[in-house]
Image (cartoon, rainbow, N blue to C red; front, side, top):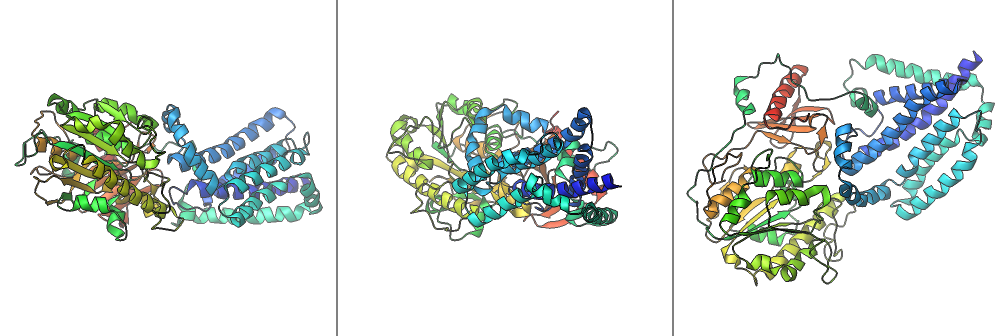
Amino acid sequence: MEQLLTISKIVFCVFVPLSIYYILIKIVRTAILSTNRWISLDDINFILLASIIIALASFQNSLLIKILFFVPVLIYTLLLWIDAIIFYLYSFEINKRNLAEFLNDYKTMFYYSTRSNELIKRYPWILFALPLSLIMIISIFFRSELPNVHTFVMPIVFIVSIFVLQKFSQSVLRNIILFTMIIIPNFIFSEQIISLMRSIPNSIMALLFYMILAIILILNIFKKTADHTFFTILSYFRKFLRENKLLQNSTIKIKKEHNKLITLKRFNHTPTKYFGLLKGANVILITVESLGQKYIKENINLRLPFMNKIAQGATISKNHYAISPHTNQFLTHLFSSNYTPNNNYLFLELLHNVNYNTAFISSADLNICETNELIRQIGFQNIIDRNSLGKVNNRKGDYVLLNSINNNKDLYKNSPCFIQLLTQQSHYPYSVVNKKQFNNYSNLDLKSKYFNAIEETDFVLEKLFNELSNLISLEDTLIVYLGDHGESFGELGYKSHSNSTINAQIQVPFYLKHKNLKPQTVQYSTHFDIMPTIMDLLGIKYQSMHQGVSIFSDELSLPPLYYSMIKKDNAPANVKLRLNNESIMIDRVLDYNLKIDDNDNIIKHLSKGEIVYYHTLIYRMLLERNLIYS
């Protein structure tokens, strides 16, 4: 009986700090996707199980049995920590596919070290949350052989933690409180606290444990009928253990009106009434990083004089969509006009055949995410990024684009030219170079930084075009202005981009402007349609089949399928299926199965039968578009 009471006491003492550790990890994990930050019943079940395993293992005499008990708990603790950091930095869950793809590109890892600094500034305690928890577990493992482990390790951890707090802290009081939340529970197992704990009768500690255990058991009884997120959200560790593949049910019969959505709709080039209207004109395609239409519409105080100048007298798409909210996907869809290119990038080759000089100029480092290699495959003759633009007047951010005026003026002067400009400052974490001038939004939140960055980028682009007017005739230049994708700040729980198909991430501005092109408005378009539109205006015919058509074509229509760059097992994690004035959106990271309207308002949560049906339909559509991954 006494041994049982002692085990119960240890379980209680482990359960409390592990619960705090899990909550802190979950705060970091949910910073990008604003899901439930607090602990769920499934989390509690796993923490309780881990606590019981640790307590039982501490009484085992066999070293091998101890190791068999402790290793799963250590792996569990480590995986939670790694998953939280990886998800914060890159918006994907730990699984074999995502890690393999990411680790294959070491330059991307180096690039995201800047986001790591931001993570440490925001959550400095993440650095020592794992070590302290592991120390607690290991100290129990060696409770007889190494009883004074905390005496040696805790001072070192304390010094390192204080250094981190002083260097990166944004709120000293907040970080001290969080630091205390981590330190105090772990000191429970130091010799000083253990002596005090031993003075408390085992029966009292055991009683506290049995009360907690009874509450957990009662909650599990009610779990089957409850629909609150506390009961329904699965533990991250359960997601580690099980596959969550998108599957089809072979017995499901697809409705007649949906069958046509499965088959990929392709178009050959059919000249419109505007065919050849701008033959021989220069083309400058301005791509503003992460520029979503949502915040342009909602924020009337956003100062974008250059964009507004382009919009005046331009052909405008009221509803223009990215197919997938990521720059590499944008480039793929733009220049292949297909979901997957199969190395069929035709458009620039056709431009070269009629003596166009092509260049891709960006203020970003194009080595990140292998974007440089993708642009080479697309066929640009000249690729210039911030590494090759050179340092002139110590310019930073998007200002380095101005260096192309002096360093690469031949690219503009060799007409006709097709030049794509890609900015960078409005990409997370939203940098501002001239903070004195661009501080219209003074709040410290990310959205304010985003707005300030967009305003500065707009200023740079206006300055660039003023200088460009001395090199080429802007009168005979087709200006194409758009965002590669949007950005979200908490809508339906999503932040940043790449992880969702909500409008905030896929709806972007799209303007076409030339003095000979009559201003008009089209109701909708996608990135698939941009190059077919440009080729039609330039009078260049092509014979291959594509998803997109000219926005002036009678065949113009919206594709039904949109998907996230983030993957989950065998398919995109988030997929949207557009059906008339409503959509089906599934998300296998957040376990969403929703019917939403055109403004992303939730109409209903799908029933179990509807989930099976639409998962089957979406699976078959993805398979047809080569978006099911083996």
